[in-house]
Amino acid sequence: MTVIDIPGSKSVTARALFLAAAAEGTSTLVRPLASDDTEGFAEGLTALGYEVERAPGEWRVQGRPAGPAAATADVHCRDGATTARFLPTLAAAGHGDFRFDASAQMRRRPLAPLTGALRALGVDLRHEEAEGHHPLRIAAAGIKGGAVTLDAGQSSQYLTALLMLGPLTAEGLTITVTDLVSEPYVEITLAMMRAFGAAPTRDGDVFTVPPTGYRATTYAVEPDASTASYFFAAAALTGREVTVEGLGTGALQGDLAFVEVLRRMGADVRTDAHSTTVRGTGRLRGLTVNMRDISDTMPTLAALAPYADGPVRIEDVANTRVKECDRLEACAENLRRLGITVTTGPDRIEILPGTPRAAGITTYGDHRIVMSFAVTGLRTPGISFDDPGCVRKTFPDFHAHWEGFTSPARLAP
Image (cartoon, rainbow, N blue to C red):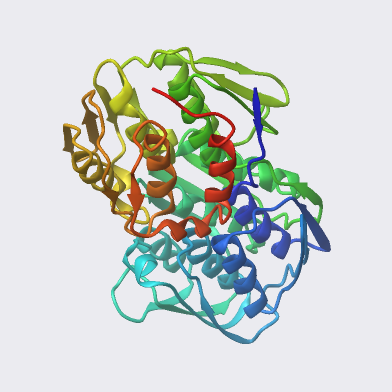
């Protein structure tokens, strides 16, 4: 059995940084993810005037319930979607003039449902170039609150941003959602808000958030379940046994449900209160699976799919087209380059069994494309990547960890 040390969750770290910044007092984040995305988020907080002290394994954030200390700020959000969506929302609850911009990749990604909702709540917000995209400016004067309707069909992060804003408004928020993807991520948000003293509730498609504010706390960040998917998939493919500690039955992250997909394909899966173990059994069955709620692991399954004994059809993943790249087409294109037969539709991909050949993978600067096709490379030597370093977004040491994971024994078909 191999025990893998997975870095902290990006999603949890980003939410914890927002909540700590908004809380009364000083919060300590234990084992947060240190990566390009989360460091960009922390630096964005610093630019807004929050005090963030980063030490190995522990970050301390001095909260400011009244909002940013800076009267003006120019924040660069890098490639981080959580940074680009959460920080403007946090700043809008304060007072001052704030500008937000991002990388070319992030500029292409949509913001309109969120910024439209903020405008509906009275926020003075202006997109400087393309409507519904970065860069944007906010003349913040606090937010009264009230009722708003939101389409979260492209990203659950829009809803998360508004939920976390709610306790900072004068009167609270009532949010009616007309569509929602990646719903488990919203459950992460609600649980973490409660850990910081808020009291959000849900009744079907309606979320109610009273104006409680937040209280500082010490918060332990659990390992990243999306990152763990690559190692779980590797175990299923190679017949090895992999355990990830810190992701057990009480884990917040919905992406841990990826192991249930592996179970359906034939892997042996065991989950207890503190850990999850996956063991390959020598067989991978084809299947049809809806991955709407765990779409960040779609590329992991796509990269594993050629080794199944039947077609693998992944459905209801239209939102993967507006991630760091069009992940659905990126997976299809790279699989075809490897000699695999693939068909796609607006929200689906179907992959036929085959024997991948060595080829260069086009990453589109997307960390998940690299880490997913590293799984394929366990059975297909010679796979290379045009931008292997883009893993710094969420797992800067991925290649070293992967080499250490695969080197103890030669992984034969």
